Image (cartoon, rainbow, N blue to C red):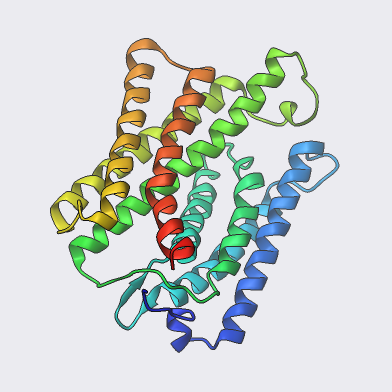
Length: 280
């Protein structure tokens, strides 16, 4: 059984302090997500604009980063167990969303993302029995690019879900509610494919660095992760080629995006869930 760390750099913070930081981060995530939800449903005339919820989300992300730093870094390497990895990915997603809001209308992603981040930052405080990866520059690059790619494609999956809901409402001529607050359908699709291109590039680098720097990439405990990651890469690559050559859009883009992300989620979190939680 892998060693359990009650929160790695709980050498930096005691467990009570870390839990308080995580609870505050979770509360701010939920408050920011709630304000964005009200803004999406009722509009800015009756609820606050985007400045307050995004500011709260930024503070939450800083506190979230403290928890991640404390949980992942250990004296012997990176503790990337199931809940720690989930906390890292959700942190990257929140930071990515906040950076994107400076140029793009993507606040709607926070309605789904921020509650997930609240859950993940709390779970990062639980004893984690995941694999501890020794620090090596090449392996660190592989982990970083893989997690950034996963986070970007996870944002694309959330965008695809919201795009599907918008497309459904427009097809059935239900123009009220949140439909009026979302960007235009074409804008949503452009945002989706922007995320897909970036995520695909990062995933490609992650797979390449894994091939170069990870010695046992096809070992028994990694073969399913590697295979499903390649499947996801093929799915996303096919979608992007289909968009470029055949003009794929709408429900076709949504289905391929969600299919590729399902394979990617099973590749990483599916195998971790089975090995670290079910079989531990």
